[in-house]
Amino acid sequence: PNTILVRADWDEDAKVWVATSADIDGLAVEAESVDALYDKVSAALMDLIELNGGGTFDLSSDVPFHMVAAKTGRVPALHH
Image (cartoon, rainbow, N blue to C red):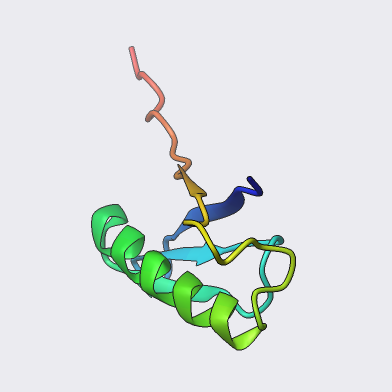
């Protein structure tokens, strides 16, 4: 089955996680935690797939998605 790949990135300025996907048009969801984002993404994908008439997805079975979270940071320099 086609698996939807969702990317979750940390927005340092807004202090939220933002989910987008190249696999499905219109996905733009944000939340304060990855777990909350996952729940919002799941609901949004269901709505978007339905709005798009199913697209390339087989609606007779569950449509899998994979959410990958990425947050970058820096380790402070060590001063001797």
